[in-house]
Image (cartoon, rainbow, N blue to C red; front, side, top):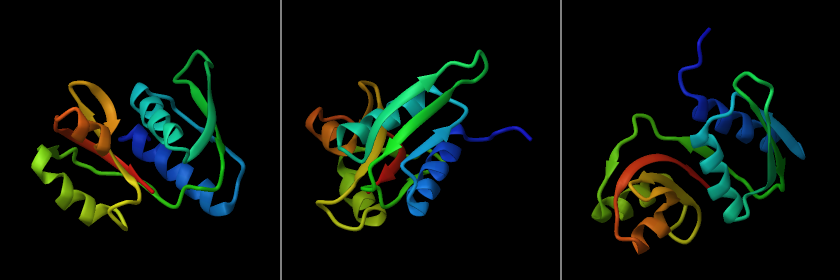
Length: 130
């Protein structure tokens, strides 16, 4: 079988390992988008360190979990978000206004919705975590 969405597989594996109480998880295959998504999660303290293992194929990522992640997921298809639509999407996806993050891909790179709001830019939604 061919993988349809590498990011969705990685986040589902991360979510399942967190629910089971694991301390680390192996994500494969590796992609640039997955790495950027994990770096946004790490910046906010939802996952610990992660390490990329190059196996001369698609690559693997070993992620250290810290037990703070409640849920993460992908929004498919990647809808366009204008700056004014952020509040509506936040209220639909996240449990509270001050809690959790939406991850967007913008012309300035992959970032959370607070950073996109500061840079006054919209983009396409990749996923969320809280």
